[in-house]
Length: 239
Image 1 (cartoon, helix red, strand yellow):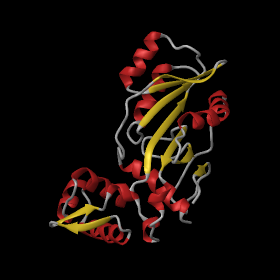
Image 2: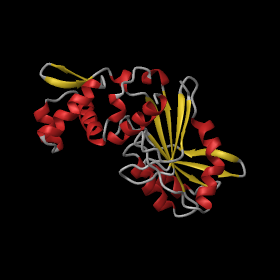
Image 3: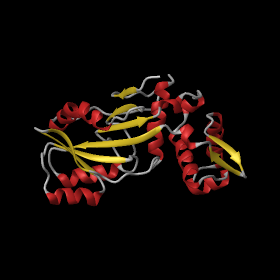
Image 4: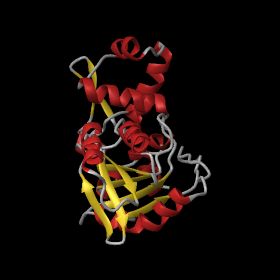
């Protein structure tokens, strides 16, 4: 199995969609600094997946890095590669609730009996869930979710307020979120604003790429979109 994967173009076969990049200085900056960003976050023993402007419910983050354990994706079924967002929302609900009946899923998520029944069948065939103590439960989490870190990057030449808002939005799915800026030394007030939004700052001035401010760490999976990244990796490794 490969420990390096790049998702640069839409691939409907695995359900991954992106968009045509907006030409301009921000695109130039993130392309120029991408290798350094990867080197900054890579960890020994973990694979890395690089997603360029992936489509998620909250928009198209400029760059997302996923550090993952490749061994988790070895036991993969064909059915798992067909899971829909509805299926993944049920998976995430079972993760959060630590177990739920079909009726409970219908009430909580607003799905019909037929929708839940079909999803449960697919999730069971995918070896993601099992029936225990009158509830559907996830199988061992460490064996089905391989992402260890999910890092979102937003490139901004100017307008810190907008950059921080976008980066904060990315925390919906990411474990860490950063703003990439050419400003060598952001003002103290800017760093305070970064802390208020719980996002970090990466600068790429003459002294090279630096992590100026750290954001908060979000537990994964943060939402069903965190599962989407997990499934895109698994589907690609098992094509």
